[in-house]
Length: 441
Image (cartoon, rainbow, N blue to C red; front, side, top):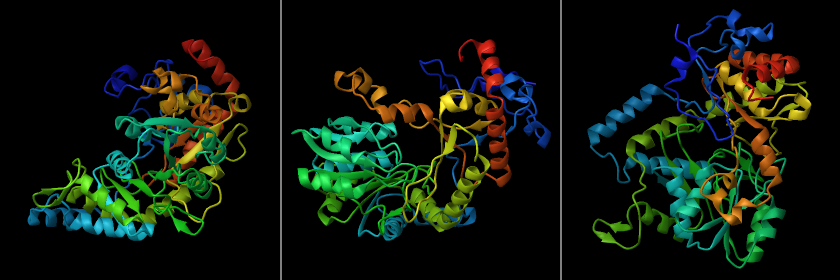
């Protein structure tokens, strides 16, 4: 049998400068039956030498796959047509269906969501400073910084995990040109409050909606808020096009500028009328996106069922709670988010994560440690001393659990039983971790 060191040698390095090494105890191929999943003493935990609960690891964001045969049929048609890119019929149909789902007149499909953000920033004519949450994926901030715009990091609301409107208003200066909100976990921002602030101060408002396709609030679908919104169809999203993104807007002039910028500024075959880059979605990606859209209702139904199963299975654990979305008409339930209250549970989020990783449950700690604690921002004086207490707390306490099409009810039952067991053996686990590694006390 391979040693843990041999098994994990090919794994990507996730080691951080805080000493956290989540792969250290992960070993595939150990244990394969129900007996290996049952934990009757802490010696049964993989981190302490027991069998691995999930030899085939469970992932956060494992791709949902729709009708494979339908996709293969689309792929054959694309190859037969020899129209592989450059705004072909599959891209046009994908844009039409996304616009219809988001209840907006204009959709511009792109190669990925980061490119969509960068094009939108250009099309909006932004400069100076843009207020943005630090509690988001780093691409949100990078899209601004890459274009020479200074992201001003703002704290988030402790309940919704989205931009806190009161904190936004405090950060507005004469250099502020826009506010960039981020919907997270399928939770929509407080869009009306943000729109009121931006209207009063003459600012543009746009949204990173990478987590929120298919969500609704106040009778409106995500995609139609602010000046524009950006969607992601990356492989990890519940609707994916392998890689892809889109800009959604109600503004015809903004849509026209963005569409030109997506294709080098070409208006006609040999007529370039604006600055632009190559951010076109390919036909094969659009075909995957269309197949995903056909399976959307089923994917959302699975996500809702998984979310409810986790809520039931983890109920009653003091110091651990499944994040509940604020009231809104619809959510994609794309993420299952749990918050660890270390003083109450008796284990830190990272200690719990280490135990789960060892069992093959590849939970994730989004968005640790917050954009303002990452480079290049943390080295810059204006970010180094910024106090974002809610962001700091969430980045140290939140954990994402595996969900999606590949998770079975049995998988969730075992994950919940594992966490319940760990919660009941906190003192012994803490002591063993401290004695065994000297790193986690």
